[in-house]
Image 1 (cartoon, rainbow, N blue to C red):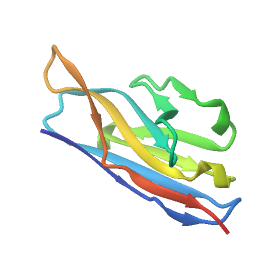
Image 2 (image 1 turned 180 degrees about the vertical axis):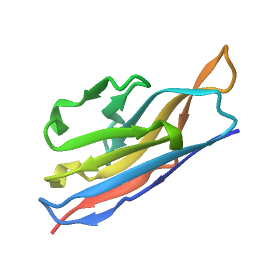
Image 3 (image 1 turned 120 degrees about the vertical axis):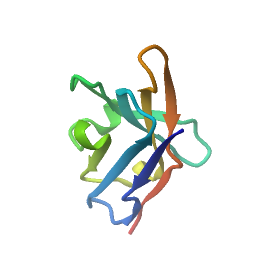
Image 4 (image 1 turned 30 degrees about the vertical axis):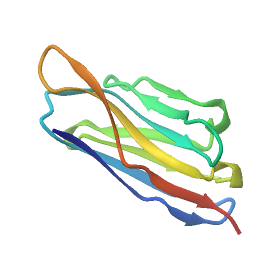
Length: 120
């Protein structure tokens, strides 16, 4: 089994910062792309940022210049540093990882989600 455990969500005022973490554990041969997605009330889940095993990064236009994704391969962990938060960033944030449990097949795994609320 593979588990993704997220932490770091909470309530923050507009302009504030939060750092999300997501650690993968279990039977892991290798981890490919890791990323963060979010789902606001009444909206579809959307991509926030992804990072490949080689460090190539992709951001949604709405978070460029404010959010930074990074990963620690030794710890099987991905981070999302969120600065200059806006009320429209309020959502449940989900961690995603594409993981090989052996040398052949890879699967997508999701975390349970962590709520980020930006409000004064």
